[in-house]
Amino acid sequence: VAGGTTGGATGGETGVVASGEIGTITWTVSGDGTAAAPGQLVIGGSGEIPGYTIDNPAPWSQYSASIYEIYTKEGVTGIGDFAFYGCTNASTVAISKTVETIGKGVFAGLTNLCNLKVETENVSFCIKNNALYSQDMETLIFKIPANDGLYVLPDTVTEISPYAFYMNDML
Image (cartoon, rainbow, N blue to C red):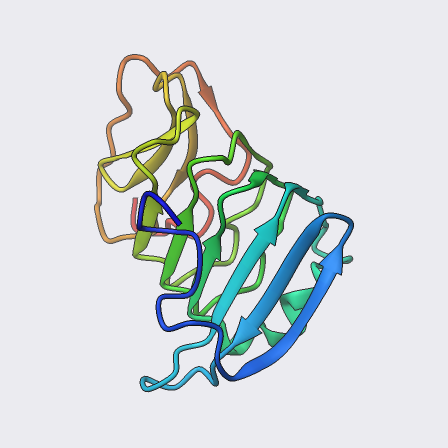
């Protein structure tokens, strides 16, 4: 995959635990969650990952305890509401250059998230100061939980997405 940071599991998709399809979207959970084989959720195919709710979670949520890394592959154009909810051990999420929309609560419950990446070729989103913004810096999508204390929003922000500060208890 061109662009490098996303597009698939860095170690390949060996040790597949579960996989499935949702329309034109495919997903695979691999690894066992150990340091030697950190659990990875890789979502590919084409189109948008559907939206879910807390009461009706994504099909991979039953494996959430072993998911430490989440990758979207090129071709995924959107991430629906609460798609990654409950993946509390995920420390890395990498968003491909083709993702154009991100729903509410996508990162809610990712209490160990410390490494959020967006491919530089993505024209819809960017990372600045440990936060995910729309590319025009007008919408704050999510602030990575950290012991930041005070967090000052850029003057350009006119909208804050629901759950943007979820689990940011130290602000």
